[in-house]
Amino acid sequence: MMPRSSPFDDVETLFERMSKQFDDVSRQFERSNVAGMTSGVDVDVADEGDEFVVVADLPGYEKEDIDLAVTERVLTIEATHETSAEHDSEEYIRRERRHESVRRDVRLPEAVVSDEASASYNNGVLTVTLPKETTDDDDDSHRIDVE
Image 1 (tube, rainbow, N blue to C red):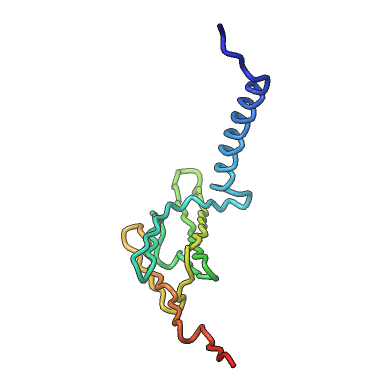
Image 2: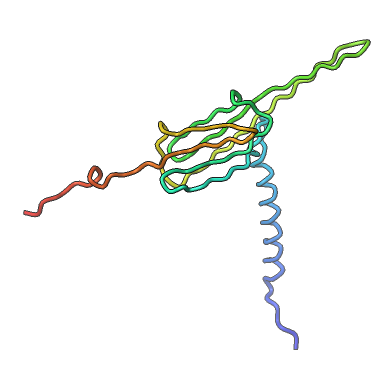
């Protein structure tokens, strides 16, 4: 005896395939936008106890090309640079320019002290250290006397 299949099995399979396709397109859209800025910055975020350490791959950029900002619990990494090359020929000189920009917003699991954050850039790898915000229980609580 053959097992009975649900009349919705085919519809469910169709929706699963459509969902996967939308996810694929969504991932591609997240990696680039119309303005030519890509978000393709690979990052690692580590919780080191009293601080977060974010390591981002930014090959081909100079330290001066990188801009970092912390707003609330989001670290924004932006890098922009322009390269140009000249090609000589007997008849003309051709100059090519290439403008590259990347941006990545990294949501942090906890609030950080942005004034104490530090960053270093070495061989195409950006390392950002963000101390966690500590809350002092005595400062945040208010004692209420019972009368």
